[in-house]
Image (cartoon, rainbow, N blue to C red; front, side, top):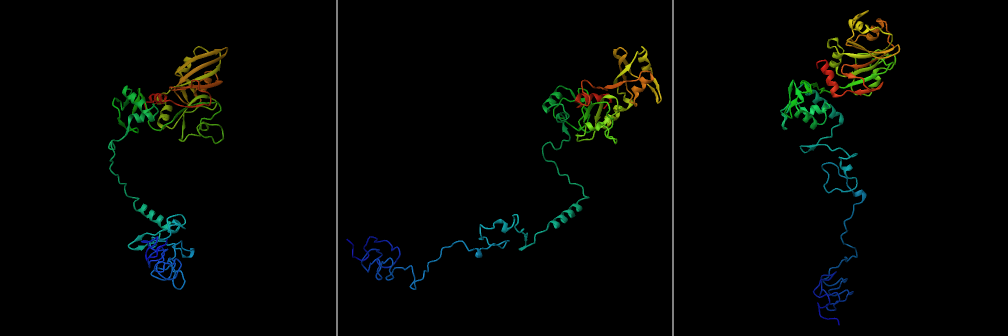
Length: 390
């Protein structure tokens, strides 16, 4: 049963979904409550009464349009400091606003005005002017603030570790065992700072090469020239050390047909002393000669053999092996004149068929094969330096 009273209906008390006038009943009959009528109040689509109408009297739709994306011709791509903060958040993006590859470079804004961007040429010239301006001025040394900065030099165990005496812990054990001395004094404390360039450091009485020196022993084969380079294209010593970063040079010479030990290093002072007659570094040679040889041959060599450039004396001579008339003899001397062993034996009446140098000071040939290059150990380097008072 439908109510006939004004304002009474199912939706009594509720607002008209499309109208604001009348009794507010969408289905009421009072007050002209026809749902599709044209008069009375409460008509959801009516034009009469107090209800608001969605369409105008002229029949045009006055409803506000929904905001959507602007058309392409209406979009704005503002660039620069004057650009709107409410510009598009998509589209060309940073490339249009500058600062990315391809985008225009922003100028600097000073005092309310924008200066043009500087070119690379301008920046380069400015940098050159600043460099020239401070070229003659001394560098300002800032105070060192980190702990221990006031102490100069390096820790002793670090220097020993870099020189090849093992890890830092192993070098600390050497110090604890009183085997290390600096400038003639045995070191017992850990962490002592030293200057590797000026302080004399020894381990077990042997000098430590603290600088970046290299020492090698080469068993030179016969036919190799004792030079680092050869203009005639012959095989030379430099062919064995072509892959070294630092330049090495040979200590003394061996003639082309002589084999055996020859030292290579970049320590100039050591090389000079090893070859100087003042220090008397001995070299040991094995020579193959044909006999028979007299018993006084050794005495003659020790007393001296007259050569065209003066007397030459051997420090030691002995027969190592004899097979029939073939003799293998050992000659020790400290001179280094050219072909001196060959000339001495030839002057005594025994030309040399084959000659091998088996020792240079404390460095021996051992089982090193012909043509092999090996790095000297720290002990061997220390013995070499001890030999020449370094």
